[in-house]
Image (cartoon, rainbow, N blue to C red):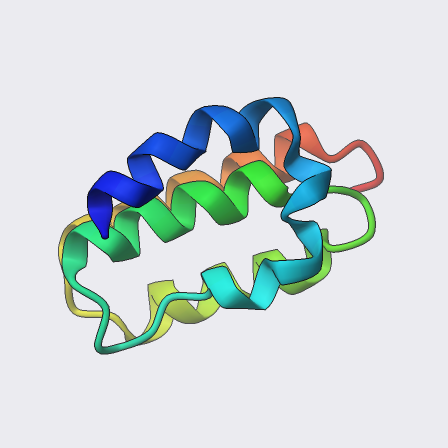
Amino acid sequence: MAVLFSGFLPILRTHPGLFRPYLSDFFVMQMDPNSIKLLKIEVLELLADEKNCSLILAELKQYVRWHTYGPLVARSIRAISNVALSVHSL
């Protein structure tokens, strides 16, 4: 699954609008392997725009609050700051 995510990231970077309707599919699930969790956070960060940034920021805040996997918490914090800086309406 990690290979699939890694292969689709270049497409996502160039055409994020194709994947925005499926935003909630990229929310981190407790049962996801840690490598997939980190990739999903990157995807959420890339999908952020002015319309969905509140939802994405709220989701990322939850990862900071309830996860015990340190790298996921750190990546979530970094994603929060990147989303806040990239979305102009904040």
